[in-house]
Amino acid sequence: MTDIEILKEGIKALDSKKADDIKILKVRDLTILANYFVIVSGSSSTQVKALADEVDFKLGEKGEEPKSIDGKASGNWIVLDYIDVVFHVFYKETRDFYDLERLWQDAEEVDVKQFLD
Image (cartoon, rainbow, N blue to C red; front, side, top):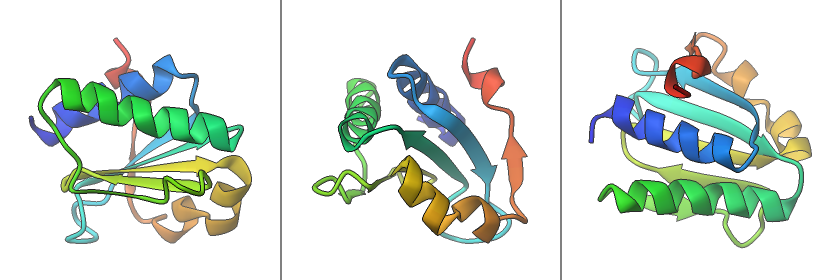
């Protein structure tokens, strides 16, 4: 799958589980870590885990497995690394504390709506 296809499937999975405040940052020109970061919130650690599980499940159905999944035990910040696309699934307060959007403020924000057709 291309990075855009991974984004589309991942965003649809997150939306289906009522993710809060989905942001896509195009970081391709700023780092070698990934092309895109998806930053999203859940209102509880249970929802955070459910969001991460749904992304993993839906992309797994398409034959995509993450290079790594970190933070699943805590449910505060789960990172799913698909090489070109990295999903950061946060508990709301944890997201506010780490404020990745500010850290990556030079990244171009991509409109989420284009992936929800």
